[in-house]
Length: 236
Image (cartoon, rainbow, N blue to C red):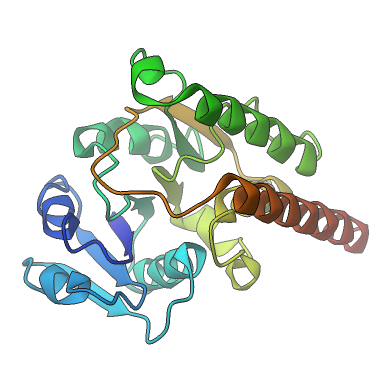
């Protein structure tokens, strides 16, 4: 299996993230999205890590696509995603991939909202916004998704078979990509589920502002909805 680590200006965290990825992971791919700090150089110092660097900043969704394609080329049968900012607990990776390795699911997302410590670790406005976006994503997918609670969590795993069915070239390139990806998964018939993961926050500061997030997610969801409708009509 492979783990893809998208990273942008994560010099403070990247080596810890890469060095704590569980030993059962065969391939680690760090995609540096044209960081202006030493992220790429520090990632290259970690033994066994493949580093791919974008020449210009293209967004986390684009970095994910680069990592997914590299993992498929390297023969991975399962591909997980762990962010470069240290927000994903490495000891939870095994439970995340288990439904895929057993053939029960094709795609598994982490669910932070079901964690018993979520109220202490995640602000109320963020919890409410996350639940609202999950509901809107299910609506955009036309009811073809299970009742997901945390559509925004980036701690995920997917089977190579399901990954090959996705039109990765159209994935939204920046923040908002998780919602687009979920609609794509629904449209391709993937079996999607969630597993409880810890809401972890390091010392990074989010650059995403509420007004911008509202505009971005509204656009992404409308775009995904229209694509799903067109795809369904073409398949008739």
